[in-house]
Length: 443
Image (tube, rainbow, N blue to C red; front, side, top):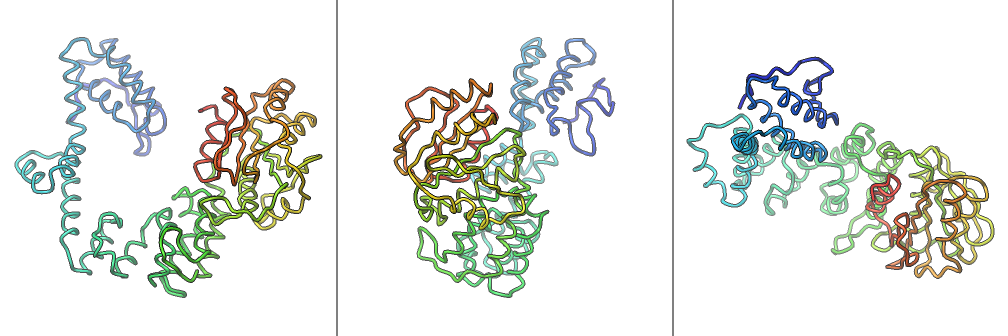
């Protein structure tokens, strides 16, 4: 449906204008678009409300949550009578026609979709979806390997869209790997090596290694370095966790993943906060983080590297008892070197208050303390909570504390309602999201 009668300006700075083919709500200015719609409708500057209702319906279906919320909040101020509301609802229905088509396909099947849309006038979007679904149906009923590979190449199909029998073919897997998301590739490296889809010295293996070492590919995939590290260690251990699949790790793939680990630090967006990352060295560094094949020492070093490389104001400490030891983990340091910096410190009993006291006494205000420990039960001689409160008072910072038990299965810091305290048991990619959201006051 084409809007008509609009008197909206086409100025290059106008929030409804498109710059370089990108609408302004895609540039985070959706709320401005809604405000402009509201202003035009209230000032009576449009001949009819239909274009405004169309634009408002469009805003109410954008991916950005803030834009959708503002659009629905503004609805009651734009709609002057029931007819306007019904018009808005109709606009939304027409905009969601493609979604309705997909829902019918999922619930009723392809034949019902064909019957429902055979005589109906189709928008360009609906036509595109129909063509795509027709191709999916074609793949589902094809036993011709060459045809399946052609459709994979032409339509960039993913393995979830193929039948189990299709995935018995090495050539089909090789076709899928060409454009498979790197996140998906990391999950099946072992299987593809075991099945000889990826063989040493093959062109497919070389192409995959090139992708792992491509800064452009890594940036596009937005893979976190810790994700690559976990996948690399899992691949190196030569067998899966829940299946009996075994493989001989390919040295060229391991080398490419090692390169990808360091290059992917560019994907970590800084939060511009002051961090203190403290590693407990009181117990054995050879223990393993549950659910992974990575040692706690390497995990702690990787975490320290993430913050040291991406946050301008980060202090890394090693501690057990006595005085915490600052560790100079630089941007050009390898993971092995960073790990050595941590484990060379003599161990002792655990005192997790030391990193906080060190920051307070040194006059180094911290927004977030991240304390990593191997202690599975966290039987500390003193709670870190009083030390944190003292640091807040003296520094004036609204300091947060993350206690991460790398080998723990469920123990809290203390019985407190302080929203600035978080306990994490074990470690995965989700932990980084929690720390990031805590630092930005989102949780």
